[in-house]
Image (cartoon, rainbow, N blue to C red):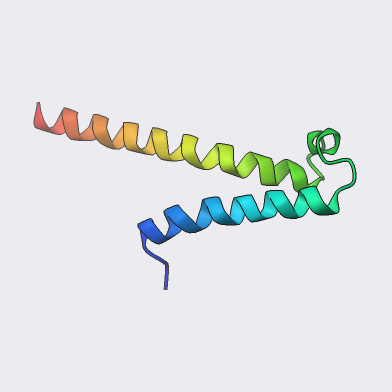
Length: 71
């Protein structure tokens, strides 16, 4: 069963933060090693940026559909 949206809203940033801390503790060249796409650090930094952007554009599209339907 899929968790509810409020649960996912809390869990995804926490898991992203945990991944970021894990990669910071494991990777010896943490800030400089984050540029390679084969690095775990790259994705742990990419995920917290991607999810809010996705949510923003999803809500923007939903709002546009709502306004178009009611006008």
